[in-house]
Amino acid sequence: MRLIDADKLYKYIDDEIYTTDKYAEVEDILDIIAEFAEETPNKWIPCSERLPERDESVLAYHRNVSFDYQYVSWIDDYSGKWAGFCGSLSDEVLAWMPLPEGYKEKGE
Image (cartoon, rainbow, N blue to C red; front, side, top):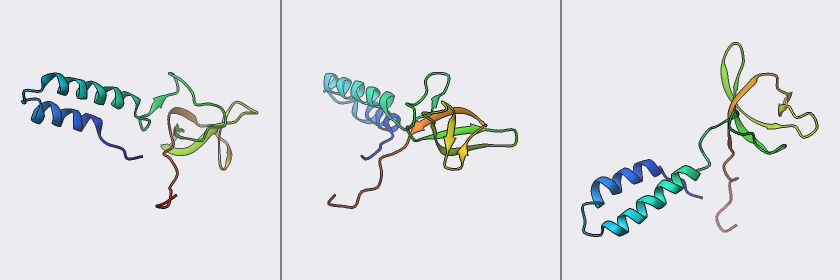
């Protein structure tokens, strides 16, 4: 999957291409880009809005008393608490985002 900056593309089309006589087609394209931008998986999701599925590895934004950090974490299916590779995590998790797809060699 190739990620694009949907906001930047939207602005470019709106500023540069929208001056053509194909207004209806451009409007349709801008609507599609706006929908895509809302669905892009690489945006932080506040835990107050929703949590990931249990045992789904995600990038989580943690806060402890000294500093904030990002760590691959999941909600443990057994305990229902946030966990990571070093075990159970007691720090507050503010937000999370899905991990990107794994690397694939060409031709796979």
